[in-house]
Length: 218
Image (cartoon, rainbow, N blue to C red; front, side):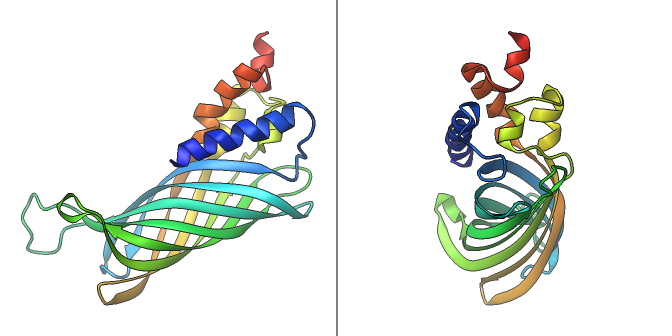
């Protein structure tokens, strides 16, 4: 679902950008896949973290400051408890998160920093069913060193590899506080990710619309 939403939103932003109606500083979108590792407070154990999230910049507060809407799925897995069978599955949960944030980027371009605060519902899947097991909140920071906005990507001034792949690479860190099964403790994690919507979908849409780097092949 995350990729479907990102695909639709990128198509809309590209249409605006290609006809000159989108401002480089107003609308922007990222549909990212992230992986990492950290410490789970509720489980008191190391953890593996993965997930998908969409971030939509929908309002410019200042030339360098934007307001973001964020939704996503986070997967937290920890090793089996001590004394478990050798083939015991990972413990953990899935969290569906929604929130808002701020994006920081110079009006002259350069790296992007996005900070978000989200709240979410925690799910588990025992015996092929889905159960709500708790609630949580998270504060996350993403840093894109080589960032280009969607509108900037339509101009393809730095080549296809930089535009569609390099500009979507990022580092992230997160502080979570999850409440379930009588446990409430902070969790820390960090890792890396890539804007998969940009890398996989933007080239296709640009080719169809004859925008972005596709112009260089015509």
